[in-house]
Amino acid sequence: MSVSPLHTDRAESARRAVSLIFLVNGAFFATWAVNIPGVRDALSLSEAQIGGALLAIGLGALITMPLTGGWTARYGSGPVTRVAVVACMLSLALPFLAPNYLGVVLGLTVMGTANGSLDVAMNAQGVTVEQTLKRPVLSRLHAYFSLGGVLGAALGTLLVDRVPMLTHVLLVVIVTTVAGVLAGRLMLPDSPITQTQEAGQPAQASPRRAGISSAALLLGLLCFLGMLSEGANYDWAALYFRDVLGQAGGNAGIGYAAFAVTMTLGRWFGDLARGRLGDEIIVRVGAAVAGLGLG
Image 1 (cartoon, rainbow, N blue to C red):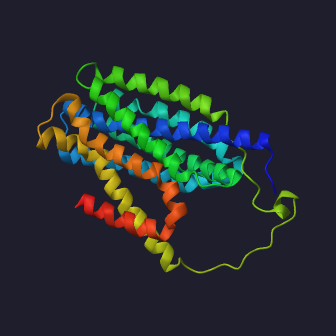
Image 2 (spheres, rainbow, N blue to C red; image 1 turned 135 degrees about the vertical axis):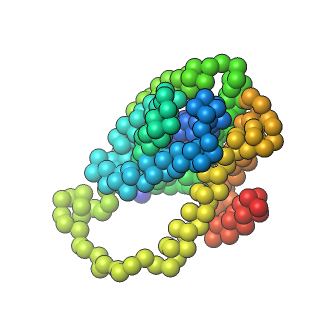
Image 3 (cartoon, rainbow, N blue to C red; image 1 turned 180 degrees about the vertical axis):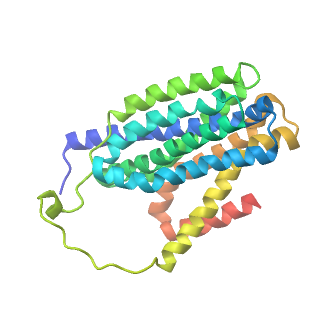
């Protein structure tokens, strides 16, 4: 069935809008990453305390990620994305306003819950856009996340130790929140699951399968390892460059910026590579290259 030009234009607008949401989410993470040394120094935190605080982001995400799938099924990925992007961008200020270690942990937990929800909802909206346009766009969407990381790291390189840390953070909060509100207005409604459900008829229940397939477990393990290496760069690159390599000020963000730039390139051309090489080859080669780089 052909897609009308008006419908295609709306889908393209939604693609640009969700790309912007991925972009501001990348800037959100980069702003936190380049300022971790500043938070550490301001509150005289140990490396063990920093590690515990960073764990709070992941734990917060684990709270809302399993719930967001149900929210998107009930309300749609568009409305959930609109709420989550605002909550996520505003939450960035919390750890920088905290007066002590406990406040930082609580602030990062809230950051994690908001970002976990946004992560699920914006990817669900990306799937809706991809299905509507009938062409791969997900890799390019994630490239915008990485590009946001590059821009956030570049801004941090310019501003860290040159302006007050809270001024830097609040500037990012304001810009990203406004961008998120504007982009959220252009989301697409999700497609119905089946025609029978759309007509109000009960869908035929599929037979239940016990357990999880070995392929799903292996892919889950690969995702875990990928996110582990990605998180190590997000959370520790700036500290490594400052404490081990002796880079002062904004130069501490150079390592994170290098990681974000190369990840952006990989994701930018990822859809093209998927179309030519197939997902299986991309997964195998990508995993090998990432492991080599981490080593």
